[in-house]
Length: 112
Length: 112
Image (cartoon, rainbow over all chains, first blue to last red; front, side, top):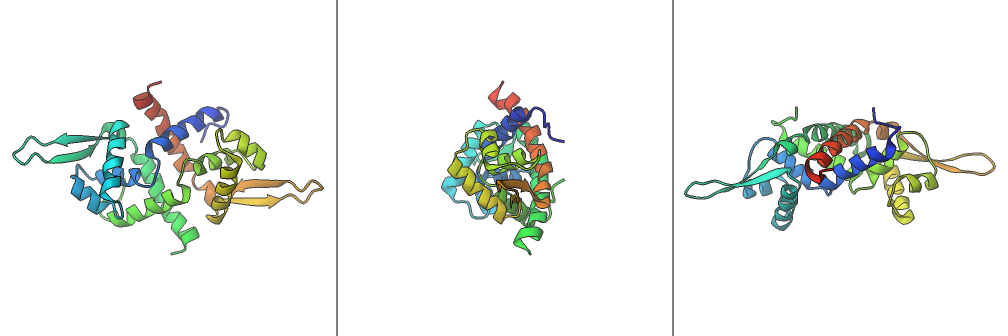
């Protein structure tokens, strides 16, 4: 399945991917945005345990990596919403496999 | 694809998975072990940029999480080899999706 012949290139790709989503928060934020655009407060509620400072920082990095976009609603209240870009959406398979494997890991190691 | 109804359980699974492989090294070490058992020196050569101290620490955590095993060869030279457990092998799909996405990310964002 993985290209054993061209090991160093595959390593570089995995490294690229890990650098874009490194840390424990980015994928959780992206997962929260899977179900649709959200405001800062909604995200901070949904991603349990994250502080406002960290959420704010992570949202910036995700924007730099073109994984999410920040849009100001042109209404009276000028709400700001975050949503996934098409490039961010392409991470769904990674999230799905992590979710799948996390279930198996809890059974195998965490044991409940 | 992802279970939107049971959001918090899915979040927990993704969190579990991320905690087991957190940091930028663990998945790279596991990837290096995909092609078969390896000695410490082989791993430190293959995982470009890792220091011996970090490799040693990461190998211990991977063992605690039952992702790899450490075996002493009962020969005269008593070589020590690291290899993937069955549970570690089950991460292959995650690695495959990361590799795949890393390729797309390089094209989209890093741009070469």
